[in-house]
Image (cartoon, rainbow, N blue to C red; front, side, top):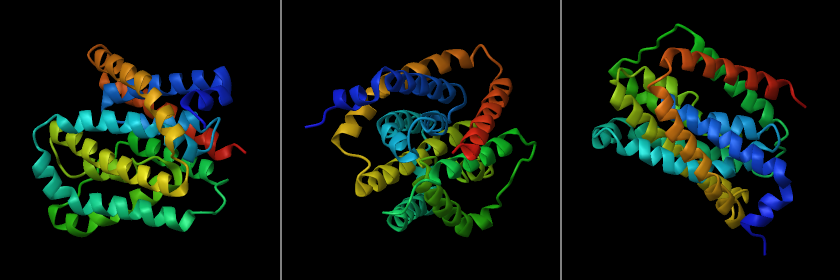
Length: 254
C-alpha cells in the first residue's frame, strides 16, 4: 500500500525541496497580497510535474488558507447572496470540463497553464481598471464562473477571469479579500471533486497535500509580516513580472 512517504521517496530529495520552496513562495505571496497561492505553487511545480499532479498537492493548503481568508471580514452572507450564481457556475464549469477532458491527452495542459499565467500577468501589470455595472452581474457572473471553471479543470489555476471580475465589482478592500476567499474556496472544492473523479487525487496525494500545508502556512505568516515592510504596489509588480516569466517558460517548454 502506497503512503505519503512513498510519494516523496519516489520523487527523491529534489521533489521534496521543490514542494517546500513552491509552497513557501506561494504562501508568502498570498500573505502579502491576498491571492496567488494556486498560481505560484502550480506554476512552479508544473516545471517538474503535470498540472493535475501539482493541483492535487494544492488542495489542502488552498482549502485551509482560503477558509482562513474567507472567515475574515464579516460580510459572508452578503457576498454569498451576491456571488452565488458565479460560484455555482464555477463548480459546474469545472466538473463539465473535467468530464469532457477525461481520458484525453493532457500534454497541452502545461501550455494552457502558461497562457493563463501570461494573461493574468498582463492584466495585473496593466493600468486598466475594469468596472461591472450591477445590472450586468446577473448574466456576467455565471459566464465568468463557468469560464473560470473550465480553466481550473484544465490548468488547476482559478484566478482567470474570476479575480479581474471581482475587482471590477466595486467592493471595498475587506469585501474584496473575503470575496476572493469565497471564490477560491468554491474553486478548490470543485477542483478536488474533479481530481477525485479523474483518479488524480487519492489517499496518497491527499496526505502529500497535507504535508505541503506546513510550508504554505509558514510562507503566509512570513508574507503577512513582510506586507508591513514592503510597498504593496512594488511587490505586486515584482509578483506579476515573475508570473509572466513563468508563463512564458511553460508556454514555450516542451
